[in-house]
Amino acid sequence: MKGDDFLTKSISGFSRVLESVVTTEDISRASGLLQSLDPRVKLVSFLLFIVGISLVRSLPVLGGIFVLIILLSLTSKISPGFFLKRVLIFVPVFTLVIAVPALFLTHGQPLVHIFGKIVITQQGALSAGFLLLRVTDSLSLGVLLVLTTPWANVLAALRWVRMPALIVDILGMTYRYMFLLLHSANSMFLARRSRVIGSFSGGENRRWLGRALAVTMVKSQKLSEDVYLAMLARGYQGEVHVLQDFSLKRRDFLWITFSLIVVIFLFWVSRL
Image 1: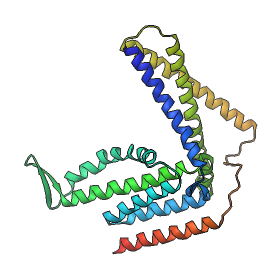
Image 2: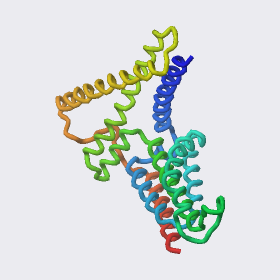
Image 3: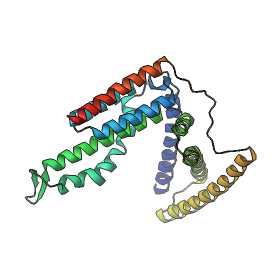
Image 4: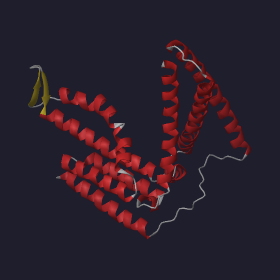
């Protein structure tokens, strides 16, 4: 029935998001290679990797970097399917919006003719390939950082590299209360599902969804005001604090050495 399908899909969608968050938190606390590193070292080294990736002008090297990232995910006890699914969700968006038009709009030597009028040039194919691989490698590093580091530690590392406290606070609040609101919406769907005997038309479902969105927005505004007042009452000063004390260990220095070697290699390749 239409009503059952609407509610069932909505409830299952919210539940999958919440389960994904729990799984991510479990991975960040596993005993893998990247999980054992200092969050500050990871953040700085990944930023250096991204800078090096932006300078590489060789498709095989960019492909090799992606293979290296996959190996790092394996040593961090992350399933390849789990990791690739999170990376490849966003890559098609960039491909469709930017890379695909570059195939046809970049002037150069014709490579493929489509319907005798549309031409894909060699230069366009190279530009699209570079863009696609650079985005994939950079996005993979970002996903790997988030998967292997608790979110509070990521925020503390961002503050350590002098990111403004306001931006760090917004990121922390967004991450924390986004899932709280998802849980609230999931509870609303479950409550309605438990009280539904028959089915509803598409129009009735849309009207109920509109009312549910309005209630959720009111709840979020009330929650933001309560949280702000509670933070002020507890002496909030705009800084991120974590219970874990960061300290550099031998493996952190080894990782720094490895990262510098990789970045120097990328700079060397970019100059060839």
